[in-house]
Structures are given as C-alpha cells and as structure tokens.
Amino acid sequence: MEKFKKEVLPLADLIDYQKDSVVSKEIIKKGTGTVTLFAFDAGQGLSEHTVPFDAMANILDGEARIMIGNKPFKVKTGEMIIMPANEPHRVNAEQKFKMLLVLIKK
Image 1 (cartoon, rainbow, N blue to C red):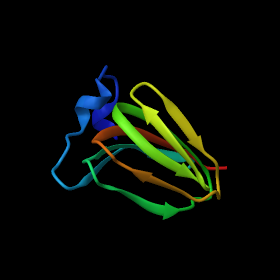
Image 2: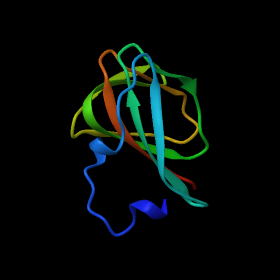
Image 3: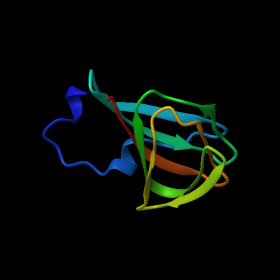
C-alpha cells in the first residue's frame, strides 16, 4: 500500500485486536504475492485450507497454534513458520495473537 512506503513502522501497532474477531490489513499486494497483517482474538481462527503457494507466518504478538497437515505447532512472538504450498493448514488462537503473513507465489 502506498501509505506505508518510506516509513519505519512498528508492525504490531498497525493492527488492533477486536473482540470475537479476526482482523486483517493488506500491506502489499503484487502479482508475485501478498503481505498481510492479522490480529486474532482468543478463540478465533482460520479453518483448514490450502493455497497454491508457500506462506510464511511471523508471529508479532502472543502465540498461535498452527496445524500443517496433521502436525500441530505452537509459534510464539518473534518466531515464524513456513506453510508449504498445497499442504492443508489451519490457524487457531488459544490466546490472542498478531501475525504477519507473507505469501509467495511460485
């Protein structure tokens, strides 16, 4: 997005939690991929799905539970995980968390 160019910004502060919701804010959208901020309230999530490109989830605040295939992962503030293209995954918030999701098209 044009409004974020040429600025130093604290990522976690660019999106706020909302009660009982998942909030998203697209930062970059290009033909080669996207960069999106998410804020998940506790108890919220994204149901199982697949995408045709790799996705990197970087946790900015809190802790996420991410399932890739049948394997669960807990990813905490400052950690990241790559969800491979075409592999089923889902995201759950046992507690609230914020993440930066980078999708790279093949």
